[in-house]
Structure formats: C-alpha cells, structure tokens
Length: 178
Image 1 (tube, rainbow, N blue to C red):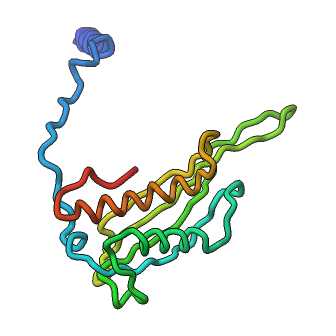
Image 2: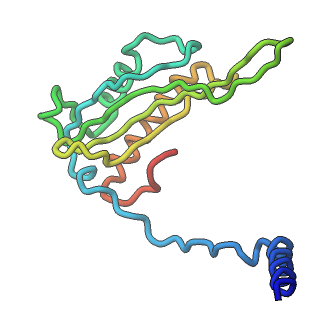
C-alpha cells in the first residue's frame, strides 16, 4: 500500500510540474466603472501646502526650499485652488516632499564600487479635519540627455497631475500615480 501511495504522489507531482501554466492561470479581472473620487477633492477650494522633509539628488541644482517655492508658484499661477496661509484655513493639505534613494550597488575589488539611485517628487493630499490621506502622486526625477532640467520636468508633471485632479474632480480619474 505504501508503494501505491508513493507512486500516486510521484504521478500527481509530475503532472502538476509539467502541466501547462495556463491551466492554472487566474482569470483576468473585469474592469468596471472607475471608482469615485473622495468628495472632499471636488468640494475643496482652499489648500495649504505643507513642505515635508525630503532629499534631492546631488546633481539637481537646488536649495532646500526650491521644491516648495516652485510648487507654490505653480499652483498660485495656474490652479483653481486658493492658497491658504494656515492648515486651519484650508479644505485640504497638500504635503509636498522629495526623495532620493539607492536602488542598487555593484562593483568588484579591482574596479571599485558604484551605485544607482532613484529620485522623485511626492505629493500627498490630506483631509484637513481628519488628516486622512485622500490622494497621492509621485513623479520621478529622471536624468535624461534630452531634458535640460529633469527636476523642472518632474515639477511640471506634478503640477499637471494636480490640475487634472482638480479639473476632473467632479468625474472619476484613472487613479493614484505610481
């Protein structure tokens, strides 16, 4: 009896190992209508911009307040939001930050060490009353030869994200970015 069980186990194991993977693949999810945005996003008129701590890559020509100043100016000049002087005066809080983190390290004893990093601008939209995050965006700061200032390119994309969100606040949007 033990030999029969052992043979059955081996046959089942081999069958599973060599069966086509598509037999076990999950069915694709059917996409329904887009989920609605939190209603606070549609109702908001006043925002407060919070300058959260962050770090930009060393190759970005920057000062500590550059991210805040450029984002503030971009929203002041081209947004339907009114900028509030304090969080208490705002409907939403836009928390702005940047990040620079190591994504890989390589090298050998005869060639030395090298590392690669990834950088991004981040924006989290909070409800003022509950401090609950309602929405978020990240835009990578990608060093590419054909872009004069990768930081400026990322900032423009982040401001465009906010404009799309505010312009489409009454209708569903695709969803949070990366």
